[in-house]
Image (cartoon, rainbow, N blue to C red; front, side, top):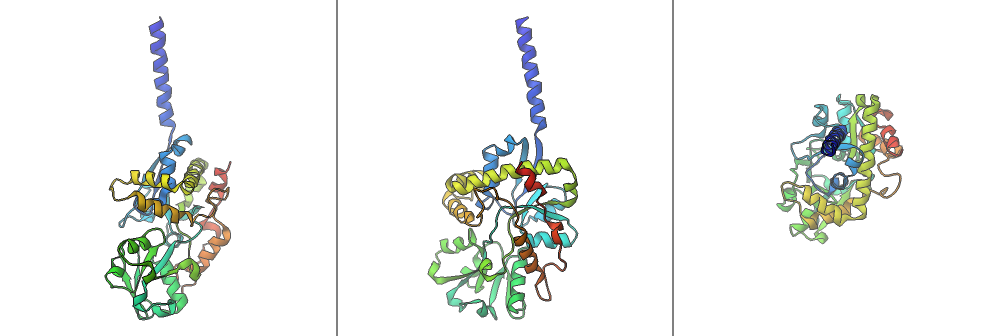
Length: 332
């Protein structure tokens, strides 16, 4: 009888454990790029079990040069994506109903990095120069900036469709190239170019910055209370991961390196990157982390609408392209 009781107990436990595993809600998030500290908060939340603690089974899909977050979510291959607001709003206007549910990065890390030897000392010197620009949705802030300066791409400035590397600057194919303060800028320096030989122009300081690395979902799904509840759990765990990453960049870097299957991510580079990323998240460690400030949203929309003859978006999406519903649910 004792053996039978033990056996029944084990079977009951197995059944309960099985139900517990099945009860974990699956969720897929698409990154904008390959595993690196730019997405550390999500990897930290995964590694430390924060998603699991919320009852979530999260799959983090890395991005790459041939991966479009918009196409991934439009094809229902992800529940939420990390994307820049210009690309997200342009996609929304084109028919993919993206809505921002959280904004972890509240500052832009985008800039043009130029060699002083090219003769560029201010944006006024861009005319007649070759400028490296990322496309695939990343070109929108640049095009808006040129419109503000009164410069026509391929007429007043030559636009070089830049790959996701810094070769055009190193090989003197361009006077300036697109870089992020936490990534490509340091690739230039690591390649042997002295910082004193470079001049940088931050989109943030030039007044043409737009919001980067927001979290976006498809609008129709927000009508489902269960989806909102699941995304709220995701935000809660992700914010916890981001707070940890900002507080302990070395630990976050180790987690990111471990999450990179290619083995290309190194601890020194990812630690440096995380420290730079931390400067773009001024709300880290506060209850406001991930909150999309309406004023920042409206400022980005205004920037994207004022692109001269080629604005990024032609119609103001109003508040339809953003919501605090999920963020507020994550606070409860």
